[in-house]
Length: 567
Image (cartoon, rainbow, N blue to C red):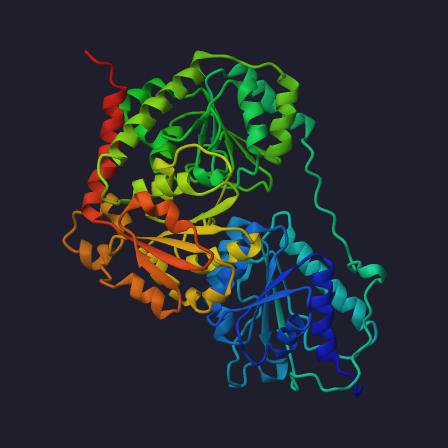
């Protein structure tokens, strides 16, 4: 048996290849069996190592880094249930197409299924949620080991980056000794000049001429069209603006689409389409949908009523929960829309778009009137004011459940703000850690907007947060599950027990107990000043749940009244 140290060499090679290929961050949950790779990461100064105690929080921290992209974070844990705790973030990464390099340490084969401690079946632990799985076996000093190890690292990264991007799982069994032996390492040199062993070129993103003609023909023949932009639209605001000018169409833009900006962005569609007369009079004859459906249930159901919809998605995903899409184009929206705009090359001026933008202004004035009528905080007012107050170049990460809907209902169009959300699986778990990951990945001011239950789901993510890239958390505290007050469960006698679920906790004290600065904010006029901080902090905004429900309903009534012609 060779005396050379294969385990240390293997771990060092993986990290070297990932660093050569541009990976800059690793998130490590402490453990023993993962020691070889943890040491290799810590000893490579090209990689920033974030140590997170809780594995679920660690996984979502890595997910947040991957959201910023383009390279995934390396995520590492020890064997056993530690690996199981990665699963929620792996599922989110799969559905949201976020690159993630998941490395789970494992016991060697001779210890599996023997009752050995901290040993479970980790083979294909995440099932079909990963883009690729590999268990290369314990490192060994064998012929051609270097190229095999380097090829493994490069393929894992390429599979994670896609298309489509997503999580990759490397299950890495290590035999003892887990620390370097001091013996010479297995010789496994990389390519000269710091080049990766295998470079994978991204797939071509040029627009297919057939798809360009299909979309252009639909634009020509449908003056009453709409662009509907949801999560994953993946098109710049400049290209979208060019396209909508030649199409003469407005854009119903979810904030997380990145297209809620410009003169043709319709931000008040939730309120407009709750007004029955407006909704009936403004049914489009064609819809071009970019990415996933909107968050708005009202709008999605309205669009599903017999309107021809063409779905554009670069990864050929079947994003059609209402089973109403008439045609699909597997293409990147950016080059496709730019090519269509070049082909048509003439601005269309039509009363259709003017009617939508005029209604947008009427609805915006009505919504602002309701939001400004009282200084008492509630979700819609906070979402609108927060999105408006954040400086250009900052990032807003919004939590699922009521906050993402409040933002959709009330955020006015603006540019200069980058939006993120975990809308792949739409869960509220891991939010605190996702925000900290986005902050680490961007290196610029980052704010997270969430509800109280979302915050409490991931308070472990606050452990060590004061030593991470700073982020501000704005927590809407309505003492429970506020979203359920808008749903059919609300009248049930078991509502508070099963759905309202009041926690009755002092969230400021909870944050401070985790070593993070926190304060309660009741004056929304001071919100902008409260955001200006160079440290991680939590701003808790108390909300009266029932009063907030009534104020949200007042938004819809005010818009309907404003749209009704006076007698």
